[in-house]
Image 1 (cartoon, rainbow, N blue to C red):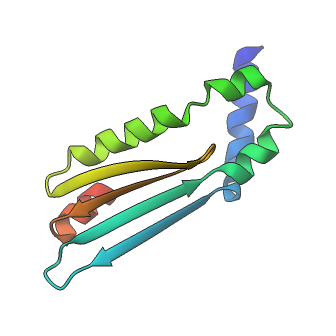
Image 2 (spheres, rainbow, N blue to C red):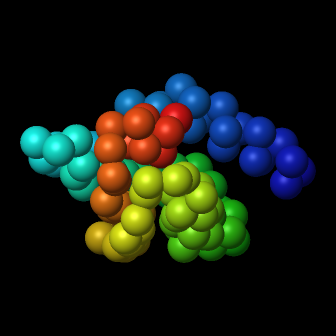
Image 3 (cartoon, rainbow, N blue to C red):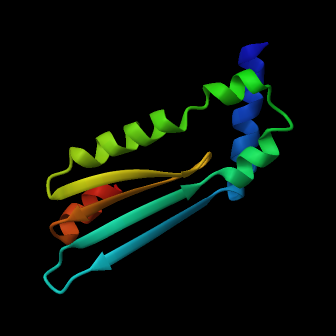
Length: 110
């Protein structure tokens, strides 16, 4: 039953993928270095999902774990420094970092 529910949840998320917003802000300096900030807001999607999934499954969707996974990916890229995360609301967070050059930025985004 739980596997079926999780499968339905992922299908619903795939169908309603337009229900979350990703905003990326990049500041580029003349020397090629700069800063990047990626904001992910899933509150619209979670608002719709709350009617369909039980509370126990909602609690297992840990935004802090997602944030730490994303931060770990950025810290391993050469030329990326000052990686920071910020939880903006219950289902919204941002990750920002400095990059030494556009090559490091491209690697971080990949």
